[in-house]
Length: 92
Image 1: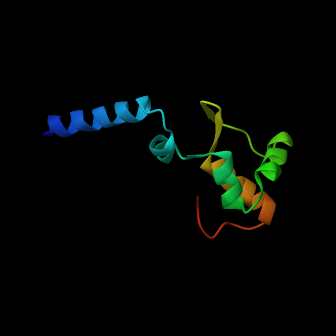
Image 2: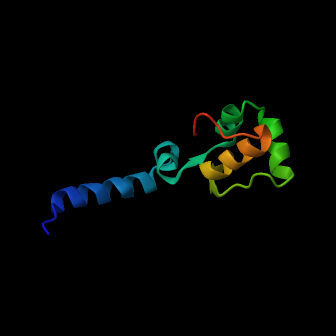
């Protein structure tokens, strides 16, 4: 099996750049995470309502990026199902 080493090294360099990037925007797409503002927007709720859901244990932060908590998209979908009693039409 032939492997294009230049392409392989480019991909590794890109991954390292993402991991070293101070902004989570590209990295969170790979990890499948959302900020609390994105969660609130997706669920059509206020940030304060989402904070109450977190306090009640319905949603838990998976990662911390600086001061921002990041939530797994699969957990957000589960919260959507709890809130609306149906599957979402569009995934986050």
